[in-house]
Image 1 (cartoon, rainbow, N blue to C red):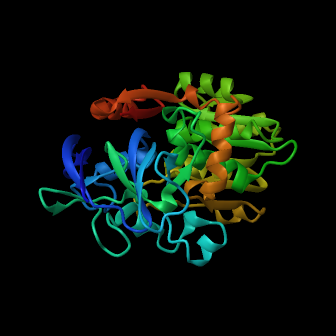
Image 2: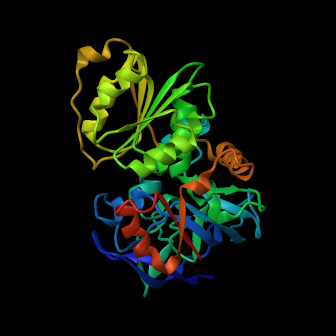
Length: 368
């Protein structure tokens, strides 16, 4: 039986979110109906809403959902009605990367999560007035009071942890954490630099503070965010509006450069400066995503000292393992995610968007 629910719909590229009644299809064999309690607002949502990515509009976005399972499809085994769940990205489960524990690099990741707007079989999950809408965003489309989610998007979590306190784990936080833990893997005495102190960057700072890295440098232009970075574990900060990045990192590392850098800004100019600031055999993780087709120029000879540049999707995370661990760390106070979150009623989604664009909030979380 289909279900009518309230959703925030983007009518066209650049249009605001508007609340509208939509109809969800009944759960397929490997899907679940989830009553949303909270959902994070991410820059990827804003990029798609602006028309910067070829997602079919009108459509329902949202990909950091948290809620309670209400019904499950006939083949679902991992969750049951009443379970508290976080919603993350989906994947096919059968390709080489999925089988190898790297579902963020699923062979069908782009159409299943970011640009397809429908299930793998081409059917629609959400409609309005009998017309299909773009949906199935990251296997969930959680900007709605109820979401139809892929089983592979769902992670069962501790019911004692408030869902609005952990919703961002589904994308932004696991991206920043995974950049440090899964790619950089700092060893004793390492230097980690985080370019950009937004939600992803500050998550990387918190993750680095839980490793043997001894120098953690946060870089941003906003003084308040740099102060917060220090409170969350950065040992040094650099105001990019006042200091030359390369000179600052050289000074803080005794001229050696950084062992690991997480680039979250999406600026190719900052990316290039980061590569130049790497130490020999250092690694830069590219997290920030500029528009499709963006290119960056690099000094080839500068790479011959063993420098590595690694692109990253969603922290290269295996969600069923990582997300419950992060939830436990939030619960125990070891991952102070609440320092990043500002909550907004779902109806105030456009205010949350404005505050995010203006830099007034780091991680808006919509509550239902």
